[in-house]
Length: 208
Image (cartoon, rainbow, N blue to C red; front, side, top):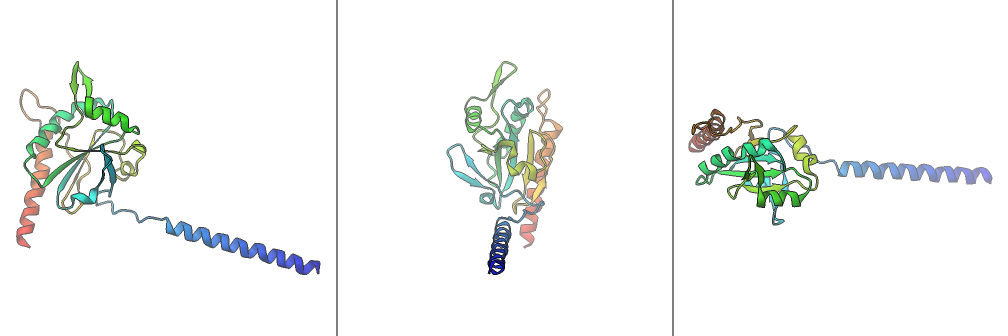
């Protein structure tokens, strides 16, 4: 009698363990998300300062320039002005969209930067402007998956994305400040990269 009870008890344990294992396997399979194609843009879903959710998918059919920055980043401030000139250059071109993504983990810090900029060399400089769509990765900050996807080690950093979501450049030329009123080679190459893509894409569209 005792032997039968013991067998039934052991059988119950085995059934429970099998059920527990199956549940775990099922759960693990359920939560494994497909890894995005590394040749394509990261499919982000981030909020703007008003809390509106903005998706990378919203910009299909546009060339997208993404500018990553953080608060108190001196190089980000130094390069914000030449990048602002590039945004102005494309202001009337509806095929080109600029997005800046702040990587601070505090949304209030990000919003304060948008409103008040930062002081460098006794003057106020703004990280971005109204010609760019401003988004934030807070509260994850730099630990948001988008940074590992683009193998980011620091900022400033830019990504240029094509009309079908393909990555045109992970590390485009740096748009450096003008010198003696002459536009820097980096800024010229930055624009040339976009313009060459637009021209090539236009020719392909005509062939179709």
